[in-house]
Structures are given as structure tokens and as C-alpha cells.
Length: 192
Length: 267
Image (tube, rainbow over all chains, first blue to last red; front, side, top):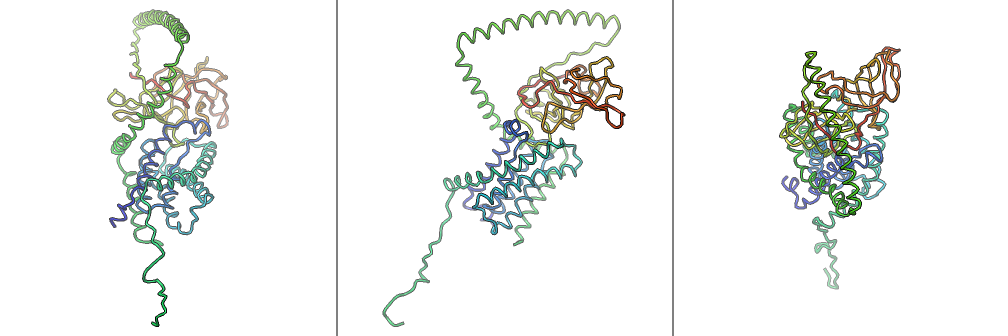
């Protein structure tokens, strides 16, 4: 259990959480996407896709909790409302990750688009079921499309960036050699 | 595929979310404050980075440009001084008239300058955070303005920061008055989702005589915003609910999309 919670190669979870922290901060301070596209983009779903395909369950849980709490802290959202959408995105991908060709940029693009579209939709659903008055209209549809599109484009970049950081700074997994003494074919002229 | 540890991890996350969502509002505010303080070093860095180009630009200004700026500022200063003298005379006259009619004297509002440090990362709220808090005397529901006009009101306050709900957010309703002959009154409601400069002025009388370009100011009703703060100008109007009342679109004076500094009004 301990090696699951505190793996030797703990660099990856820290890197993912640090990226989530910076992503939330960037979303709160950078006004350029709002001015250019009419919507603020959210990179947490794209990060969740990366975490679900490459990291363990504790990392996914930590990203859902901390990413959601950080986002809600800087927003007028009720604290904790963004946790569930992130978790709902991460879990199904994690459970099916052996079936997903996660090295293909197209697969990353599609998953990023789906995750970035699902996260705000689920959050809105939760907020509306809580009786909150939100700023909604036809423009919301455009914002939703922008969020999904930017999330889709950003996901392959996030994969490349995180993989490069992992290769540069993280421990590399020890690759077991194919050669095994007990399976060596004994060649000899002697009769056995 | 569905191992026990999967359920345990998912259950733990759901439990954390439910606990956070069911916390009382005071505890939530405290938690938001303490978690929000993690971002303070980054806000400091971002502020310094924003200041750097301005400082660099200042350091390379030519002597001619500086002299020109000094000249402009001197002229502006003279104009403002003459306006201030006129203002004092008008205030004195106003006091005399109030005394004559036994009207209650209005207490003047104090202003405090605040920097906008961040915007709401979610698209469905229209809020900003400013760098003043309870240590600066801020409390909930104080009006926030710029030199152009009304911006919003303080919605929650921590020790060092405060959240401001902007005009156009559905949670910031303002009682407003159109400066026309009939002094039509309405309520400012939510604005457009993409255009932050337009808001809806609703519940105006069906007989309201609205024309594009008429000024809209705060009416003073509601107890939050004092009377007379400029809000914007009427763009167009239409009759709604089979002529029961009139709605108008108002273009805000303050540019909410690029707020950098705002004033908080203290009674």
C-alpha cells in the first residue's frame, strides 16, 4: 500500500500537480484568451487525460481534489464543485487505458476534446442543480466549443511536455533484460 | 477491471467533494482564503513581471518626452485646481441651501484605490479579485467604481483580498435611473455572455421614453450603491411581455474587460 501512495518515482505526481497549480493560476491571470476567443480556456481536463493514461490512481485522485479545489478557490464556484467532473473524466479513461492508443496524437486530441467539453458541462450541471444563477446564453455555446477545441489542441502538447520533463528529471524505469540464465539453451556435444 | 482499490480511491474523492460542498459558508470562505494564499508568491511574481516593461519604458524616455509630459500634467493640474475651487464654492452653496430647507447633510464617500489581481477562471461568473481586504477596512457590499463609472460590489472579503461581483453578473443587481424627462427606473440584470460591455436594464415602465445615448445612473435604492454613479448609456429598448414593461440594453461606461485599478467606495 505504501509503495502505491509514495512511489519511489514520485516526480511524476509532483510534476502533474505543479502543472495543475500553474494552469489554474494562468487561467486566473491571463486575459488574452478571453479577449481573443471570448472564453477562458481550462487546461485541467487535458492534464487529467494525461494523468489517467500515464499515472496511478493516487495521482488521479490528487489531481481531481487539488485541481478542483485550486480552481474553485480562485473562482466564485462553491468550493469542491469542480472535483467531481475531473474525477468523472479521469476514472473511465484510467479503467480503459490499456485499450487506448495513448501514444497517438490523434487519440490524445480526441480524448482532450471530449474531456475539455465534458468538464465544464458537468460543472454547469452541478451548479444549476444547486440552484445557482449563472451567466448563460447563446454565447455559452461558443465558449464551450472554444474550451473543447483548445483543450483538444493542448492535450498532445501537454503529453509531449510532460514526457520530456519526465525523461529529463524523473527516474527511468529499469528495463528487464530479455536474457535469463535459466532459459539459456545449453549447447553441448555431450550427451545429456 | 473494477478492483477494490478503484472503488476506494473514487469513494475517497467523492467523499472529499461532498464534505467540501456541505461545509458552512464561513468555513468555506476560510478554506478558500487559506488555499488562495498559496498563490500569493505567484501573484507577486506576476505583478513584478507586469511592472517591468513599464519601468523599462520609463527609463528610456527622452528628455523632450519627459518635458512634454510635465507640461501636460501642469496644465491638467491647473484645470483641476480651478475645478476644485468651483467645487468648494458649490459645496458651500449646497450646505447653505440644505440648512435653509432643513435637509439632512449627505456624508461624503471615501475612496480607496485597489489593484485587480485576477479574474474568475470560470466563464459563467463575472468576478474579479482586488488586493484590499479586511485589514484595509473592506466589508461586503461596498460599491466599486472606476473613473468611468460603476464596476460592481464587494461580495466576499478575506484579510488581504476581496472578490468583486461585476455589473452584468446575475448576482449583481443594481437599481438604475435613466436620465430623461420621466426619470425612468429599472433594474440592471445579467449582461451578454461574450460582450462584457452590454447589460440588460429591465422592469422599466411600459411608457418609458427611452432614446439611444441617454445616460443611466444608480438610483440609490437598494441601500448598496449611492445615487448618481454613472453606469452607461442606453443602446436600444424594446417592449416585452405584451407591453407589460420595457427592457433596454445599456452600454457600460467602465471597460470591465480590461480592469486594472478600481476604487472602493466607503460610506
